[in-house]
Image (tube, helix red, strand yellow):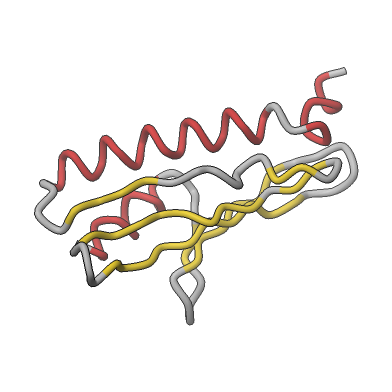
Length: 106
């Protein structure tokens, strides 16, 4: 299941760190390109994967702070793909609304 999650995030341009289960993607800002990150972790007690602890801070605000997805271990691949697509769309919408990114459109 972890491989499916990693593959889905990669399709959207989120790259896995080679050592830890963190993913990042670089976005243009008015100052300089900036990396956003999100973490993948397994909750053994509830048998599920979490994508959480996002970070993209702009003007002192982490716009991904509350971003998360829960993926139970019995979730079908198609449902994983749909959940990750919605998560990525939400993250990228929040990043597009970040102050340093909004300034690019002015």
